[in-house]
Every structure is written in C-alpha cells, then in structure tokens.
Image 1: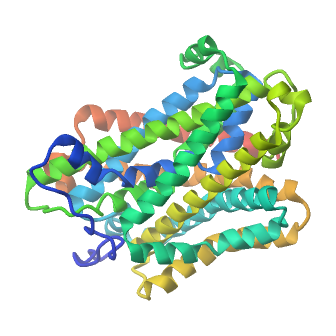
Image 2: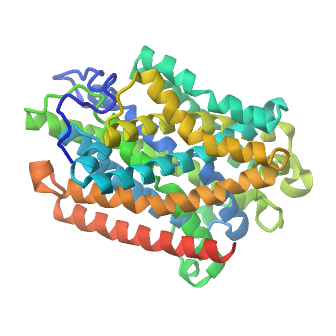
Image 3: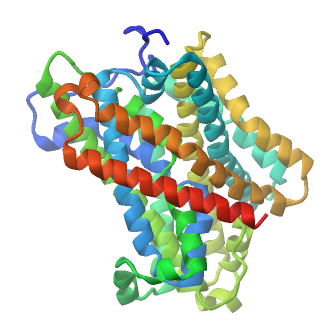
Length: 444
C-alpha cells in the first residue's frame, strides 16, 4: 500500500482542535486532556454487556466480579497503547494497518472492521429501541428507526466542537452510573460477598457454566472499535510532535484520562453484576432479555419490597442513555475505519450517513422480518458478541505490533514489560474468544 499522506489527518475536522494550556499545574492540564477517555469507556458499558453482567450475578452471585476486574485491567492496558499510538504517530490504527499491509489484506481487514462496527451497533440500536418502547410505549420497529436516525444529532454536535460531544456523552454516562448506584443501594448487597467476589476463584475454571459466562463477559468487554477510536480521538488535543516532552506529556495525561474513565466503566459493570446478585440470585427468574429485567424490577415476587415502576423506568432511562452514548462513539468509529482503510472522499455529512446506513441495515432488515417477535430480535445480541470475538484479534494484534515497533514509535515504543503483558493478554483474549465461539456454535 502507498503511504498515507501527512495531511490526511484522522477525524480531520476535530484533529488538534482542543487547545492545551502550557505552564499550568497538574489538575488544569488533566482537565484539558479529560474527555476522550469517556468516549472510549462507553464501549465497555454498552447494552451488549448488560445481559451477561446481570446474568452473571443472578446465576453465580458475586463470584464473577473477579472476571470484570481482570477484563477492565486488560482494557486499560490496550486503550493506553491505542492512545499512545495516535499521539506518537499522528495516525490512527486503521491508517497504520492500511499502510503496513498489502492491498488485498487491507481490504480484508477493512471488511472485518466494518462488520465489527455493524455488530457493535446491533446491541446499541436494539438496546435504545427497546428502551424507547419501554419508556414511551412506542412499537419496537419505530424505536429502532428513531435510533438509526440519531446520526443527524452527531452531525450537529460536530459543528459545535468536540468538547460538546465529550460533555454530552459524560452526562449520559453519569445517568447510567447514578441509576445503577441507586438501584444497588436499595438492593442491600453483601459487602463481604462483593469483596470476596473480586478475588479470583478456581470455580470459574472448574464449573463449565461459570466458565462459559465468564468468557461471555470478557468477550463483551474489549471491543475492536474502541481500539480504532482511541487511536484517533487521542489526537484531538493540539500537539507539537517535534517536541518529545510535549508527546510524553500528552501520553501521560491521555493515559490518566483513559484509566479514570475505564474505572468508571468497571464500576458500572460491577454494579450491574451486583444488582443481578442482590436481586435475582436464587429466584430462578428468566433474565435473558431487557424486557425481562424491566418487568422483574417491578415484580415483588422476584425482587421483594423494593419493586416499583420507578425502578423499572430508571432501568429503561439508563438503557436509553447507554444506547445513545454508544451510537455516537460507534458512528465516529465507523468514520475512522472508512477513512483510514479506503480514504473515502466525500462530504462529511454524506460519509457519516453512509457509515450509519451500512451499520444499521442488518438490524433494520432483521427487525422488519421478525416484526412482533422481540425475543428473536434480541437474540441478535448473542450473535453480535460472537462476531466481535472473531474480529478482536484483527485489531489487537496490529495494535501490539505497532506500539512495540521502535521504527514507528521511537523512544515511546512499548517497554519490555508492557510488550510482554500485552502479548500475554492478547493470546489469552484470543484463546478465550475462540473457546467462546466454539461453545456458542455447538449450542446452535
């Protein structure tokens, strides 16, 4: 492949658009770099994670909290590398992958990345569509159409500046965090059980059902599109790459931002599992769908005296917030992938509309075909998570290779312990995801 032109910046209209104050203290500098991390963290608490996390608590109480902890630590490592890649090279992961592969391989990897975006959007669109139905009693197909059209909101937001997008997504994430913190506080969980749950248990390996659900949690946590997104939006801060000290500072504060926001995602996912454990463990309730969770929170026979319509409505509000924040980042990721792999030349509004249409078409087709059968529509979530597991190595392996390359990264190449930790995490992720795929296919 030909080298990417230096002028072909990732997300060109916002690249380097956020000024960073010079000569100020730690906290003011951190505030200037705070924002991209929250867009990344959204992918780690999207609707695709909800069912697996709550089901994990409902079936095995607090035991799988250790899986959420380990998954979050792996996510922190990979996202820090992703941000560093963009800051040092001035290119995103899609651009670098295209640049360092043959034309045929580049096309193949682009197709895989596009399919991963579609798979990601499935959970987000279905989650938002169901939330709209639960909140406003609107038919699911109409809710999905409304969600599919929200790309128009992103077009307006991008005109207002990238900081506005960061603030809106942060607000939506705050809603999710507050809702589940409130619901967990009402559920009266066992503090001792929670603390013990964060300690890895040999049961996870020896219990087949527990292992399978653990793999589902891991597979739904690390998202391929977030690695592309992180390598791009880390470049929204203005930076002089001729100054190594400025690069080092950008890496430092971008990593801190990413880790803080991923800690929030870790807390949200923990709250989901704790809620499942405190309310549903031992009840033998069917929690395979969002509507099941919605109904259960208003059922005294299942959750006891705290059951109320308000709990159900708050759950739907959090689901809508999760879906909407995730669709914003999903659309941005789609643009990054399309620009990086095929250098699409067209107006930005048309490019985003095309990206959105490509990702939502399968969902809409499936929803129209199975109109009225919400169970089958929600089953798409399972298949989307399986495909994301298939797509993950095609993003993780190039990321580890490029950030470990002294030719690309110079003095900022991964240190030995980072490189070996990253390859270990990559091999473990691939192995677990292959196992998950085989197990899922065997049950079809």
